[in-house]
Image 1 (cartoon, rainbow, N blue to C red):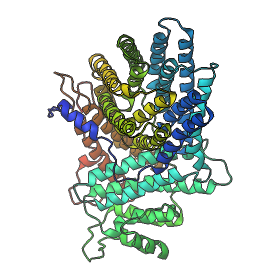
Image 2: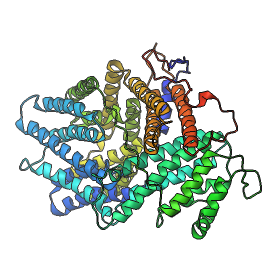
Image 3: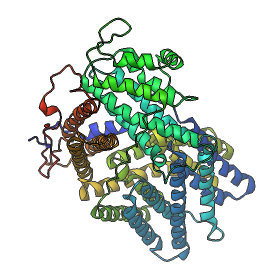
Image 4: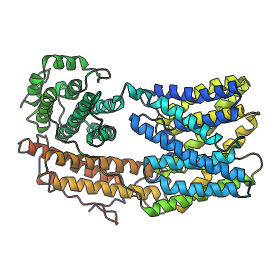
Length: 634
C-alpha cells in the first residue's frame, strides 16, 4: 500500500506567484493572427461608428459586447465557437436588462440587491460545464455594466447595442466556416500525427514518458473537436463537404490506433530507426493530403514513401531484426513496430475503420459545491459593492466586475487569476497612460484600441495577464470616448483591482480553502478507477472496446495530472500536508502502458511485446493497483 500523502517540499507563496506568472506564456506555436485581427477590427469599428454618427453611448455599449465576444473567440471548431459566443451574448443581455431595471428603478439598495442575486444565480450555473461557466460569468458582468453605466433612451437600446457588438464578433469569427468547414478539426488530427512522430523519436530516452503525455493531450483535443462527426446523429448531412468529413473521421480512427502502437513502442524502451519515427508523417500525408499537411525535417523521405508506395516501407518497419539506414541493428521483434507497419498499409488502402470510441462522460460537480460557490460569489460581490459605496471617489462597477473575473475556480487556480489580474491591470494602466502622455486625440485612442484589442485576443489564447492588459487599456479608452478626462482614475482603478482580488482571496481561502485539493482528489480517484477498469477488461475486449477503455483511462489520467498541478498552485493550508497525487497518477500511467503493450501483442498474435526488460506476470493483469480510498492509499 502506498500513501498519497507523501512528504513533499512545501512551496512558498513567492514560489506559487512565480509559477502563476510563468504559466501559459507564449510558446513556439503560431500566434493567433486571425483572432488578433478580429479583436482589432471589432473593437475599433463600433467606436468609429459612434464618433461619426454621434451615437456615442450605444456604440460604446456595442464595443463592450464586442469586448466580451473577443474574450470567447477561441481556436476551437466553428460550431462550438458559435454556441459559446451566442450563449454569452444572451446571458449578458439578460444581465444588462436586470441591471438597467435596477438602476432605472431608483430605489435605494436596488442595484446592490440586483448584483447579489445575479452573482448567486451565476454561481449556481457556472460549475455545470464550459458553456454554463461562460453564461454565468457574463450574466453577472451584464448586471454589473447595466447597473453601472446609465444609458439614455428607451430600455431596449442597451441590450440591442450589446447584441450588435456580440453579433459582429460572431460573424467575423465563424465566417471562415463557409470555405474552411473542417479546417480546425483537420489541424487537430494532424497535430496527433506530429505528436506521435515526436514520441517515436523520443523512444528509448528519458523524454519518452513526457512525449507520450503530449500525444495523449493531442488525442484528447482532436477527440473533442471530431466527436460530433463520430456520432451519426451529430454528423453532417450527405452532400457537398461529406467527403471531407469522411476523410477526417477515417484519419481520426487511424490516429486512435496509432496512439496504441506508439505507446507500445515507448513501453518497449528501445530507440527506433528514423524510418520508423517517420511513419506518422507518412500516414498523415496519405490520410490528410493537401494544404496544411505535416512538415518536418524528414519530410523529403516522407514524400518519397508516399510517391512510391508504402508496402516496402511497412515491411522494413515490421521486419524482425531489421536495420536502419546506417546499418545498425534496429532490435528484436516488436509488437509496436508490427502494428505501425500494419497501420501504414491500412492507411494506404484506406482501411481500418473500426468504430471510434465515444468521449467519456464529463464528471459533474456536486450540488453542494454549486451552492457553496454561489454563496461565496454572492458574498464577494456584496463586499465589493459595499466597498464601492463606502470609499470616496467614483468606484462604480470596477470592484464587482473584478470579482466576477477573478473568482472562477472552475477555470484555474483562484490565486493565479488574482495575481495575473493585478499584474495585467497595472500593465494596462501603464500602457494607456503612456498613450495619454503622447496625445489627447480621440482618434489616436481609437487607433490604440486596434493594438490593445489585438493584444487582448492573443492573451485570451495564451496568458490571462496579457488578456487583462489589453482589456484594461480598452476599457479606459471606452471611458474616454464617453467623455471627460479619466487619467485621474488610473491609480484608483489599480487599487480597486487589488482590493477586489484581496476580497476574493480572503473569502475563498478562509471559507473554501480545500476546493482545489478536493477536486484533485476526485479526479485522481476517477482516473485510477478508469485505469483499473482498463486493466481488468482490456484482455478480452473487442478492438473498439479496448480503444474506448484505453482512451478513457489516459484522458482521465491527463485530467487528474492537470488538476493536481492546479491544486499545487494554490497556497497550502497550514497543518494539512498535500497528497502525492502525481505519484499515484504516474504509477497508473505505467500500468496503462503495460496493459496497452500486452493487449496489442495479444491481439496481434504475439506471445508478448518485444522489450529490453524482463516481462513478469505483474506487467499485465497481475499488476497491483486499486482505486484511491478515503485514507489516501492506492
